[in-house]
Length: 539
Image (tube, rainbow, N blue to C red):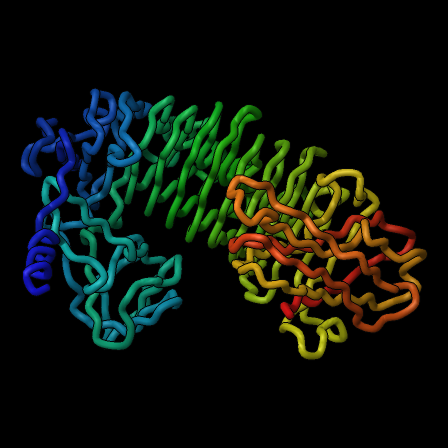
């Protein structure tokens, strides 16, 4: 055993090889001669020299922090593909390759989920726009066959005599007092290398260019097709990016054609114009869009974020947006395309009109921790809803709709005249839980109530409001279909406001996942027909 431990410890020190990968270096220093890019002393003086020449999977361009490329800028085009195992990378320097990083003189008190660090004494060395990380979160060890990138570096948003603040909350591994900060290049510009100016009509154009990672760059411009345009490109990843517009025109990121699978992490998008302040998509775009730990700032003029088109699945982990010019068409999220499904987790929306739809095709939005409230979730939908602004499903903690002995919240469903049992577009799925079960018979129970008997003309039937299991139905055939078993009980809402229950008993023939779900499909009557549910109980 000791020999094995020693061998593994040795192997951990051996860098992983990237076949045919080359490291290049870029610096936007004024009047620097364009070099061969193979060393910090002979860097490229522009990004075109890296992107517009054929590159191999795994190639990486390190860009020096604290400098700006603001003259002789043209559209940045791409000519090569990486692979899913080895993307082509453009990254700001996180590893002090030019020896221009500094450690803070003062120490700081650090806590997870806070956006402000308190200094041990007066400080003036850290300025707004610089990026820092807590020493201990990152190791500065770069070589040509491995890449170290700091996951917990953050942009400074404000400074005071004894504190600094960030745009995003700290999620790193350090805590308590006495921590020094690593300052990623000290300049009056700020840390991220800047490409273009906010009034420059140029863009980054990914056109059938797959598997690129871009990290730590300040990308500016006013191009109507986006400071970054993504066209039929798969596997693009943007992290620690600042997208900056001139405050009146253009769009932050534009998806213009066909499929794309894109991730944005720890980005900040600000200064873009009315109608296009965040992300925009053309009518024939599809794919997946993941946005997390990011700020999309409308600057009081931006009209909407993510007007999605065609089948798109959007995950937003943290989305913060400034208030808008009041009362007109401004909204945080606009749905412009058909068949979209959007999932937002811990999203903070700040306009008076949070969601707006521009289509009547089936689409849905689900908010978990709506507006940053841990106990608040809701679902909006076209289909069972009248329009996307209609809230079909939300969590509630208001008495008396919390059942004694139940959970801290109840589910409230609010049907509409579009809610029907004809097909699944118009049914409301109340919840679905994957439960790993054996072959033992189990009964699942759901409780529901309505606060007013006058809100009901007739009660929902068993085919309009039910609980169901979906489990393996054969004891030896691993390819068998699942059996669906539904509850048969009904609720008496027009006769009672007490909590009532229905249940379903299920006995899988094989060990595995049993999907337990509840559905509502009764068309709204003259009354509200609101129902409150306590989550199921396993017996």
